[in-house]
Image (cartoon, rainbow, N blue to C red; front, side, top):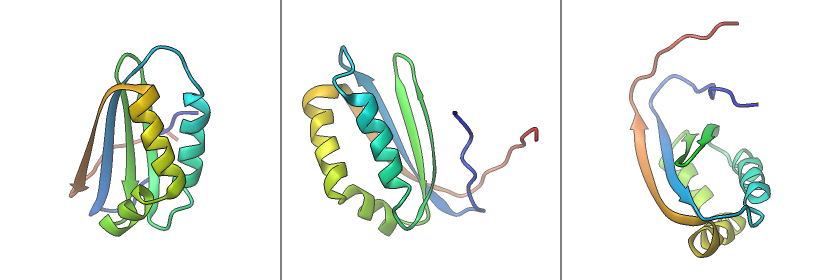
Length: 108
């Protein structure tokens, strides 16, 4: 189920991962699910939102830069990043941003 991540009051960080995929799944979906499960166990992980059509965008939210570094240095995540470069992505871009303000509403 896709949901808007419930994040705390700012400031916090967003890692924005934009990508275009290669043809075929090549076990990508299974690895993507595993990466979200692993990331959610990192101290400082706040949530994730992801969509995929022709362009995929995944935004993960983090308490601080140290938590982002912990995730980047995770051995299983490193394997997934290498497979991404060699098999799953035609192109990708990672951006890290501080969230200074957020607002919105949701229907309960």
